[in-house]
Image (cartoon, rainbow, N blue to C red; front, side, top):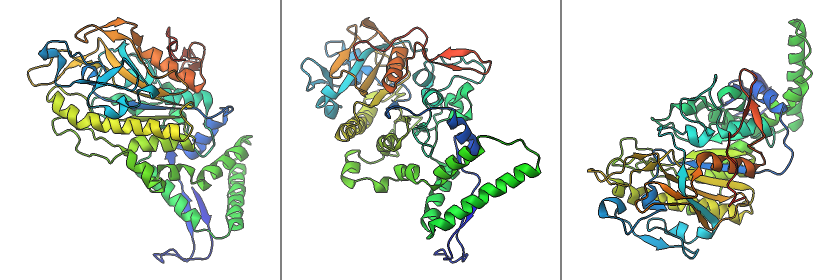
Length: 452
């Protein structure tokens, strides 16, 4: 534990006449501070800061009611919604997505997404591998891979962050870093971790004399050296560097500031809408529509995080598909367009890739409960940013939206595109598993040629 004794002034609660900063339990992804910094030291941070924001739509969004409506199909297939024109001639989408329709030139729709394994899990979207196909330690999610290969942009900011809710169908995200280990686990801003960071920023702000702070850091270094010598431990050539990085992290408020939405321009914040904690009264899962997570994702990327994953709502609509869609899809429409508008307004649209998708599609035929069931045969995805050629639709399905008939796009082609956009060649880059075996990021799939 590192304890910093600061200036001679009381806290507002007057519990002490001295300021104390004690941070021993602060972790990122379940990892001790020193472990994080030693792992980060191995990776470079050269080049401009590019990023990925993945919006994971658990349960499988209904492609027939969003991007691939079939108005000429029989009533038991086509559903209740009408297609509307977009600002790109010849492209139509569902009536519940009017904001997206007015900005179609900034987006790409994939109507022919294939390769789902049918598992109710984020595994395929976040790793590119089938659920249950794990090597020892498990497959790492894409953010952990980027962390291992590109490292952190700065020592005070993690390479990856996970803003997803814990999902009942998805045990995989518990071990997100897989065989890469907790050094590359995405940061989750929750619980004691976030509390410690807020306390750190607050207490450091109260220290009047910066020289006193630096004196305490020097004392910490000397004490660590004496303890190491007393125990007869070999000198660690990286100790000084890791200590410096630790102090960078402890004395930086960048990450906590990024998570503090009160620091955001109220006008910008309002464009994202408000969180809806009871978004799905007709759903057994009931994941919330947390609109603020779209904004947090942008703020984290802007602060230096490379990859952010966000989960949004729940789309496992075996019943009341159309009632749920009327509630959820307008919220998604607002959140995703506010995010992409914000990236454009800040000049980040070429550097930050956005993808929104789920683990499979929904059945073309509507069931007896006015719902749609699981349909791994074909699904959909929405992309934006990253320097991609936008304003287009890729692929098509047959007249009932049952299968891809033109330009099927595999999930791994999308992931290969995201890796390409962030500066990694998925065909040649690799990470080593627990046996030292190199594992390519994506086997057998290349970036989508129409986009890059």
